[in-house]
Length: 206
Image 1 (tube, one colour):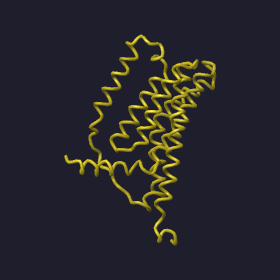
Image 2 (image 1 turned 180 degrees about the horizontal axis):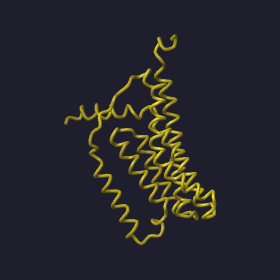
Image 3 (image 1 turned 120 degrees about the vertical axis):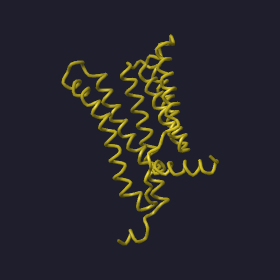
């Protein structure tokens, strides 16, 4: 496949992320999950609040994926499609799937086998997983800010590993920090998108 065709494909899939709405929505979800994880680590085990936090975690994780999709879809219909159109994406095999899975497995084995206490911190696993997910998407669609956020997540996760926080608290801090960065980059990108793509004249007067 020629480089020009690859560039067109990347540009097409980058279109879905360029307005920043996906980052904004995922960032909000990460902030909420990070807060819930922190509550789990800080509340007294067995207390009603702790039990509620444990119950909320899978609901936020699974339901949040659906919620993010609906949130992004609604905002794109209201603010994006009228400005720069709509692209319907055909599901296709992700060429990075097996590479990402292999790297993830290798990292899990490293955490289990390597004799370094700081690798046992939840923040390292969380930061590494975020790094793999965000940078793989960033590379696939050639979006540098996602690669940057992924790299920052890895650094933040390693940094919290040397703190006095517990495993759950350090994981919560890493997820929340990554969520905050995503909210900031998503908000900035969305604001920039709106400024660069005003509504068509007929929509302004309709």
